[in-house]
Image (cartoon, rainbow, N blue to C red):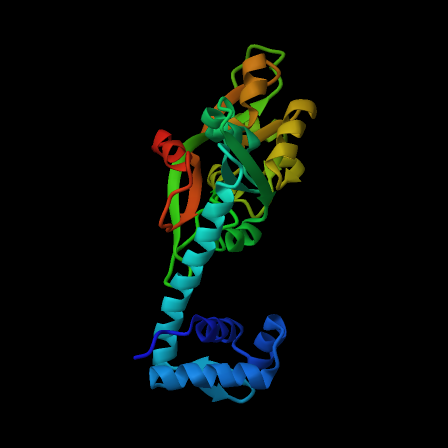
Amino acid sequence: MHRLNFHHLHYFWAVAREGHLTRAAERLHVSQSALSSQIRQLEAQLGQPLFEREGRSLSLTETGRMVLSYAESIFSLGKEMMAALDNHRAAGIRRLRVGSDATLSRNFQENFLRPLLATSDTQLLLRSGQLETLLPLLKAHELDVILSNRPVSSDARQPWRCRPLSRQSVCLVGPPRRDDQPFRLPQSLQDCAMILPGPDSELRGRFSTLCEQWGVTPKIRAEVDDMAMLRLLARDAGCVALVPAVVVQDELQQGQLVQYCTLPQVEETFYAITVERQFQPPGLAALLAAWKT
C-alpha cells in the first residue's frame, strides 16, 4: 500500500463527524465536488468503501468506522502535540489549563491548585463553565483537566478518564444559634427557612429523599445552582443552608457560620476529568497524586 495521504484522511474525518457532505465542505471551505473527490481517492487507496448513502446523509461502513477510530486517535495526538509545544513557548514557564464545572465549589478548586500557587514556574489558565461546554475543549487538548462534582461516563468515542479526588461530607450550616438547644434532625427542620441547591442537583435529590423519609417539608427561602452564590447567601441571609463543608470552610473557621449537623449517608464527590495523552502536562500528575480518596 502507498503511503497514507493524511490530507485525504482529514477530509474523511471531517465528513464522518458531520455525517453530511455539504456541511463538511462548508466547514472546510472547499467545494462539495472537491471533497467527494478526496474521499473517493482515499477509498481507492484503501480498497474499500467508507460511506453508504442514506438519502442526503452519509453513514459509515464497517471499514469506515474502523478508519474513523484511527483518525480520531491520529488527529487527537496532533492536537496534543500542538498543545505541548504551546506549553513550552514561554521560556521556563509551564502552563496548566484547568476547567471547572460552574457548580463546583471555588474553595475546592483553590485547595486543589494550592501546591502550584506557591511556585513561580507554572502559569495557571483557569476557565469556568458548564461541564457540557468544557468537555469538547478537553478532548481538543485546549484544557488539561476539568474539575467537577459530576462524573462522566467513558465510551469508545469519548474516552474520558474520571478520577475521584475527594469525598466531602454535606452539612447544614447557619448563623450561631441564640440558644443552647442543639440542632436535631429531623425535628429542627420544621421551623427553619432553608437555602438549598437547585432541584437538578444530586445533593438536593438526596436531601429531598431524606425529608420524605422523615415526613418533613422544608421551608425553602432560596434555590441556588451556583455554589459561590449559595455560599454568599448562607453567610448573609440568616437561613440554614445545605452545603458541602468545603464550600463554607472560611466562614466556619471565622465563626460567621456554625455547622449544625452532617447529613447521614450524603456526600459530595469531586472528580478530575482528563483524557489519555502521550505526555502528561507538567505538574498535573503530582496534583492528582496528592488527592487520593
